[in-house]
Amino acid sequence: MASLVLPQKWPSTLPSVRTRLRSRPPCVSMANAKSFVRKEDIVIVGAGIAGLATAVALQRLGIGSVVLEQGETLRTGGTSVTFFKNGWKALDVIGVGNELRRQFLEIEGIVMKSEDGRELRSFKFKDEDASQEVRAVERKILLETLANQLPPNAISFSSKVKNVEKSENDETLLKLEDDSHISAKIVIACDGVRSPVAKWMGFSDPIYVGHCAFRGLGFYPDGQPFEPKVSYIYGRGIRAGYVPFSLNKVYWFLCYNSPSPGPKITDPSILRQETEKLVKDWPSELLDIIKSTPDDTIIRTPLVDRWLWPGISPPASAGKVVLVGDAWHPMTPNLGQGACCALEDAVVLAKKLAHAIKFGTLTVEESFRSYERERWPRIFALTARANLIGAVLQQDNSVVCSIRNNVLVPKFVRLGPMLEHTNFDFEPLQFDAV
Image (tube, one colour):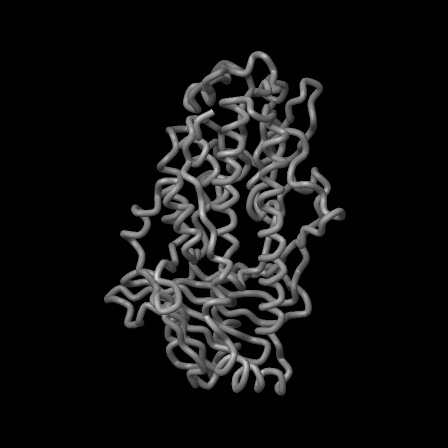
């Protein structure tokens, strides 16, 4: 059996997160704080879906970590996340699946419509695959559920990473916005599409794909009136969709073509006005959902992705630093697989890293390379497929749209091939006999 290549002072059992986070002496003055370097074993950068899921998965295997979050609290803004059966399998492995299921509706099928409200095609998920499971989960509740699985003080808030350096002792030095420093033996970067860690590793910025999305959560205090189905509506250069995910909330989105991302808009009245203007003549139920949306849930984001070209893109890891989720492979939401893939990453990485730490059957660096080898083929294919589907659905040519609505969707679209990518299985988060 190979020995674990780590500093000899690495403990056989990692100390609790609670103890480590109290290691900074309370009497350190502000003048000396900048020179103080906090020592940590495993640091996860980012308390989003990928970061929290990775921390929980590692904890299931008896390995503690510190999660750095730049916000003062969990960033629970945003709308909802749709999980297909691969996402639910990952949530089950992590240990939060049933807790979330109890709170959200199971979606039975898909309805595709044209902008004039004409139904083009419909499917039921169970008719194609009895094991399929589709639910949309409110992002706020998802993050809080994951965070509640971690020990007290496992998440270090107001901890935005400003700079990354490699130290002489083979550790990674993280400099934060407040000029404090953390020296980590292992860094797992889950810090999103604009990841400073990914930039340090040589990754280019994600590329804007030519369309933006409005999103929101319609709220019905007396109960929403919709069937548990995903409704898609296709127009020229514009498409929309909505799905009821709880008894009184409905998630909706609207994608539209734009030559550039445009300025960042945060004023909800402007966001609502622009959204309603784009679909003013569309089916009334979509407009009703938008009108029922509280201001603080409407957001607008440019859609981006990054294709991980073999031999061109940097590797997913550099020494004992590794990327997870959007930090590594941002993809467009056209397959509903961004969050699902982040959960897959978390489970696969946690098990491989745990084998390195607990048994020394491979080094940390080898575990990261193994994670990349396993994940890359799936990630590359899904990123490309999502991009292609988005390009087709966002067509604004009237002839192409007519063919799409009258020929392709009614006669050729099949649910099985559409959901083939959701077939992904996980091993339990436990150790095999060694």
